[in-house]
Image (cartoon, rainbow, N blue to C red):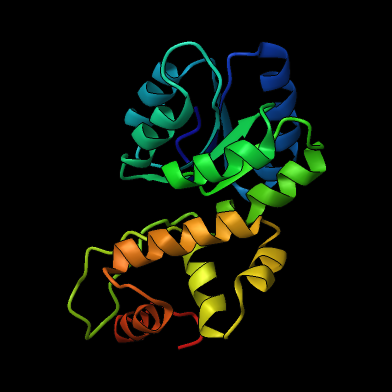
Length: 210
């Protein structure tokens, strides 16, 4: 593969027709922006590909495959330092599996029933903001906060005083998924409510509005 690419998208799916069709569509869309689109037929192939590079990766992971997949697969890929986002994709029931996959660490869930245009619209923000980890700001003692781009977006909307329903509508996700993100934020910041979360976020300059 061309090592000049710094940001890459990896589709891991054992269904060759769907995988190849999706990768072709995404390559047409993202390659002109300098984003490589790679494919793997299983999780092991994907792990080998990632380990052989030093790029920032966004992983589109089919959660129903033989071998490593599902919620366990999401957790494995999320532990890799240069994996910015894991996107769960499946033909399984979206309302049932979106909260499960987000809770496991996926940034978003995408249904395989979605159009390629919808998938591109969902992936573009993740590829644009491929740095998943919060970088310590100057004059701030480094903290080991690991907040995803989506969690930072939720935190920003909380700081603007929006309730869960408005946050859900703005980000085009369910209220249940918003609650999961908020619980993950509380856990990561080691706080118990929104007020404490905002105080901690402000002290550590985690809000875009600062």
